[in-house]
Length: 241
Image (cartoon, rainbow, N blue to C red):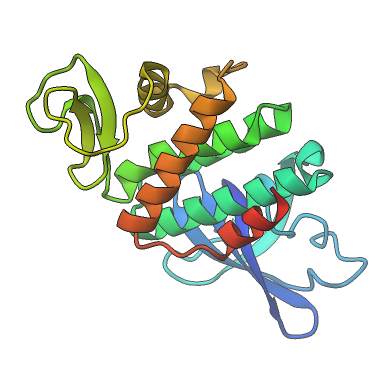
């Protein structure tokens, strides 16, 4: 049976002299493995639509829990703006790998939707670091290491929040603060906004460099300490930014 899957190619592996095996993160079935026969041939109609990061609709002979076979694909967005900018490519590589590794642990369909929305916003020209940080905040729940961003994790107070404590797993208020670094009220509020915002509704976030840097630092530390993920793409991203 031929089925259609909206998705994004998250990895490609050469197979024989002319074919590829693709892993596609799909909207409805999580990660599926697909054989693209002859896709490496110059004249193959599959050649241009089986590159890593292709966002499209894939028509496949589908075999659940087995390797399927690609018949054809329609590109939804060629991502030209991203693919002509080495810094944006760095962010794209990182967020696709992060979503891929998250989807391996959690089959929730929202993982694909969050990734797609983030990629398209970066393609539109929004700040790739801000959009990446929004995705990172949203992925924490699916990785099983979510942060409580509604109240102080120690006393339940939802006012006078001054910092985020990774070990405790959430906000800390001024009464419960010990030796954690204190962040500005704007940093605290924006971190929470990142978690709750609908990415599709984001148009242009006016955020100071200081707040962006603070949130980025918090997330890097939290991911390193609590997710257990080692992503090669993170090293590539560091090298281009």
